[in-house]
Length: 381
Image (cartoon, rainbow, N blue to C red):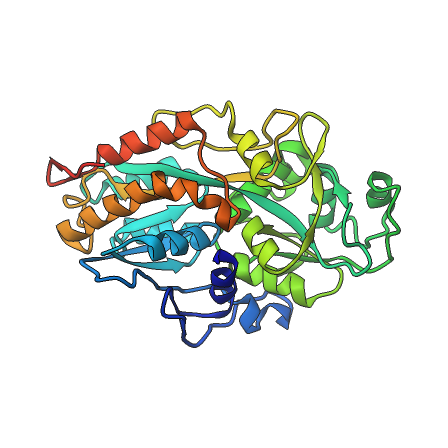
């Protein structure tokens, strides 16, 4: 079951899928509290291994948001070992730029500077949309197990440090049917360069001008309040350990920790819970630029969950010319991994609580894989 894998993912520094081998765990960083330093909150540095006879190995690094899926896909592939380091989107892009991995993984699309840096390796950067997921506003508030509603302005005020207790009038106005305690709110945010942070801040900047001017959006922002934790697993661990805490985590991590999370008001004025259906709805009608750098930010549609993120695999168009560390064998392995993820892998995403790509975007992703090369020769796809 993927949730068992998720538990191992959150608690082990090394995970060999199918072999259940756990190594030592590294502590997550925290800016002002030790609550995120336990094993449960460590960001995974993982190894996913196809147990059947391995004919090749590829390496990847980046998004912690995407890690549970890449672990799952790797365990399902025969003849390919996938070593994936869940170190955050920013580090994943850097790893492609410095040619230390065969593929990178990022939730926000590449910036022009990133594309230029990757192109210096000898080939154009390619970003391939892979799947979607909801970013939850999860909280640890005993006695309030369901029914919480929040809008973007209130979430923003919590993260700006303006709303400091759970019975603040701003929260009470949105939840007239709930009995809210006076428990202080402990804000948890990411401490690393994070695609989940990019998705979360993109939403808040879109709905609140004050947040946009004071914090802005991106993988790295200066938070005015709160405690930092590394990776989705780090934030999840800190929320789990702290009564009154609130944190933004990908839905799979929230479900693994049995979190309660809020329904969030979308652009159409509807309070929508994070689900596979509402994440899929958020991607309908998204404009797809020529470089495939889609960005879901406060989407339209009554059924759309407003804090939904896409995630990409980042490679060079001609991986061999760009100096892929594993050479031609790794280039073929990356294509095999991508073909699986955009084919059979889409059908099993729901097992890990992620949503597949809409048909129009999926077709463009498959076409991008079909265009990948090694020294000018097609790698298929």
